[in-house]
Length: 592
Image (cartoon, rainbow, N blue to C red; front, side):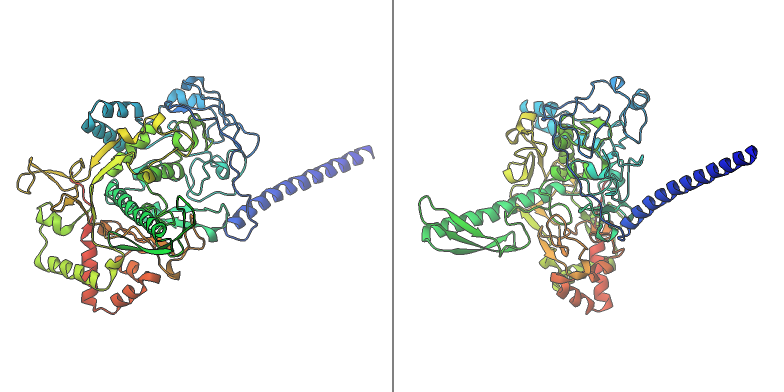
């Protein structure tokens, strides 16, 4: 009898263990199913990102270092992070969940990056060695752009679940130090190890294929239906684009100031037209107040294609970044997980990967100068004329010429303006225009105190200085035996000619191209005109790469471009082919 009861208790114990095991498995399965449902829009929303409650006050620049263990008690970073050790071997074992022992990693591996020191660049400028300052900054920026960063450099981030990179936003990972808690707030990635991993078609500094699209979740919704995509644009001619935007901003704001002066002088409301370099940005109404000195209100409701502050922001598909430097900082953080001290502060680990000071102030200067000095795009006709490619036959040249005329005739150049003029074709880093430089870095530092001083800027002559595409020949018109194919052409007054086929203005493209959400405060169907120089080398097309051919891209145009699309559709097949031939003629090129 006693033995029977023992068997009964043993059976009951086994049943109990089976029940408990099933409950745990069911719980895990339910958790997994919830994540899947959230990513397919069927589950509840996730908690919004919670920024850290405080950061260590930023100080001077330090070399990139391994930070202390990323130990946090909640989703917020500690208010006063401990300073990082100066040597890799002093680093404690990290609790970053994708690397079990940083001390071992640091013992066996070094970072791949060659970092720039802002003090060194500034010293060259102060010594009057302007050419050397430019050459050094360009060289260091070139190296950084093509560096495949590793974890010792700080590439990637603590995404969660042991991940360093993610091709999808992970708002569901919102635990301590995970994706949704990074600062600045993360909307994508990290999804690459190098700048040229995305900007690589048809060569370095070019555009990206569809596989290089980055998927964003600006709302931290975890809902795929609210995700948006961005295709990678090329960065050729970036310095000319920023300088063009600077001059347009100066003119628009000058018109606003003239309107204020007129309203005060006449003591009445004045409406002024906003037009710069042939681009119409709507109207502004100024109403004066009584009293001295005169004060005035400005009604910006009639302003179109630019923010009410009248600052032309020429970068990103929505036109939200004013400067190359600002664009670089954001892209490095979001796409690479390489955080600049300018956005998080010195000694601060905003993505909880155990590394601080991942990109220095000097790095950002070098990258800005490098991208500013990228060669301008060119054309097949120009390359053929210079003997740099096989000669084009008469039929090909004829089709391109007819297509250029037709492109204007159907109204495409009302947005894709063939060229604009820069009065002073010199790029400065930092800019001489206060709207295009940081008064304070995003993390709060004084740029001048860190050596980024507009009075001691690195300069790039956009009509001469581009290191790429300098062709050694006297047959092409170069006065010193060099034909500078990468430089801007000039007019009789020495002004720079920017043949960008764009207008640096936002336009409503209609419901066909509207996204599921507004982005950066810009309506879902509104985008910055894409500059078409280089378009023949940079498929796929449009903001999300949906168009694999130029014809598809044209047919997707709606909204303000609907009339031009209809006209194009009404052309003969031959005329349409001529327009496509003209666009395919606009290419990127780098001499080997």
